[in-house]
Structure formats: C-alpha cells, structure tokens
Image (cartoon, rainbow, N blue to C red; front, top):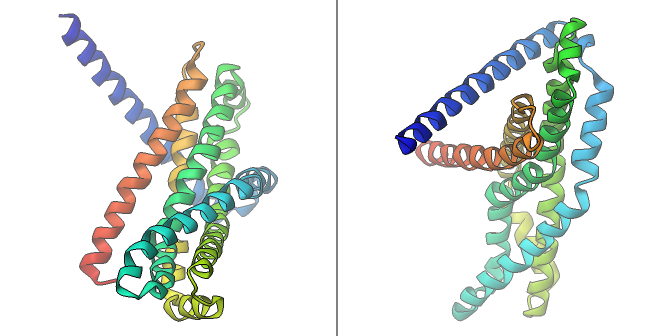
Amino acid sequence: MTLVASIGRGWLDGVAAARESLAVLGETVSEAAGMVLHPRRFRLGDCALAFQRAAFDGLPVSTGVGFLLGLVLAFQSAAALKTFGVESYVADLLAIGLFRELGPLVTAIILAGRSGSAFAAEIGTMKVDEELDALTTMGLPPVRFLVMPRTVAAIAAMPVLTIFVELAGLVGGSIVMRMMGVPTSVYWSKVAATSTVFMISFGLAKSALFGLLVGLVGCCAGMRTKSTADGVGVAATSAVVGGIVAIAVVDGLVAVICYFWGV
C-alpha cells in the first residue's frame, strides 16, 4: 500500500504541476497578446536588466565552451578524415554542424543552466516571501511584471550568444587545421562557401525558439515554487532539467520536420 500510495501521490503532484504550468502559459499568452495591442504595458527596463544578465554576463562562459567545442570537433573529425587525405573538409563539417545544430543546442543548454535556474530562483524567492501575493493584492499581474520581461530577454539573448558560440567554435577549428598544415585562408574560404544565409538564419531562428522554452520553463518553475525550506532549490533544479528536456524534445521534432520537408 505504501508503494501504491507513493505512485498515486507522485501522479497527483505531476498533474497539479502540469495544471499550474498550463495556467501560467495561458496567462503569458494572454499578456503577450495584450502587450501587442498596448506596448506601453511592457516593462522595458526589467527586460533590459534580464537581457544583460542572460547575454552579456554569460558571454565569457558561452564563448569559452564554443571555442572548446570547435577544438574537439576539429580534432575528432580530422583524425578520421586525414586517413582519406580530405582533412580540409573539416571546415565544411564545422560550419554545417555549428550553424544548424550544435551552436543553438549547446547555447540553449548553457542558458538553461545559467539563466533558467536564475529565473526560477528569483521568482521562487519572491513567492516564498509572499511578494507575488502582494502584487496580486495590488492588482498587478505577476506574469506581466515577472514572466514577460524574462521570457523576452531569453528570446533576445539566445541569438546573440549563439553567434558568439559559433564564431568561437570556428576559430577553434581554424587553430586545429593550422596545426595540421591546412592554410588558414583555405579553411575560412571553405567555411564561407559552405555557410549560406538560410543555414545561418535557420540556426538563429531555432535558437530564439530555444530561448522561448528556457524562459517559459524557468519562470513556470519559479511560479510553482512551494513555501518550504528546499522550495527554491527544487524550483531551480526543475527549471534546468525541464528546460533541457524541452530543448531536446523540440530539437528532435524540428529535425524530423526538416527531414520530411527536405530542409
């Protein structure tokens, strides 16, 4: 009976969390539609502060990870392609892989770990301190004042971070190619020939979608925070795990759609 009770309790908790998340999502969509009609409702100052913390403060970490990612990919792929004497095609592999897939994906995971957890911790702390109840009592929607600025900031920060991650990865690949005797001019010319406007635009659009997921999941986790000793910690953990899972699922769906559409 204890096992059955635990399973039932976990299922009920999951249903309650899903209901709360859907409620926050619906209110967010409603507020977004209202701000399109009334742009002055949007809190630009809060959004700018959240954008600074998500984009500029996370730039060193993201750039460093992108540089190391380019190094690793170049070394691993060059070791295999060198057997056939076509190690110069590493530039094509890096350009396609970074612009279409790895750049947005790695950046989104970093953003989920940094900013997604921060969104959940900030909103969760405000809920524990009953600041959200105070906003509601004063007739100020918490979603408009807390969720919308952070979500928009995450959407705007993702393409910026993705560009720097991709450029850092290409620089790391150029260093490896130079070590293997491939001229730098040849490497960058092949990167330029492989990179198309559609490929770059597709990766940036996908990164903005990932930013939307990170912002929504992080803020929803914060809004669901329980007033317990470990409530904020649980919310931050849920934001990171939920954000990464959502990114992986959506990335897989996008890959399937692109395959059937021949993109």
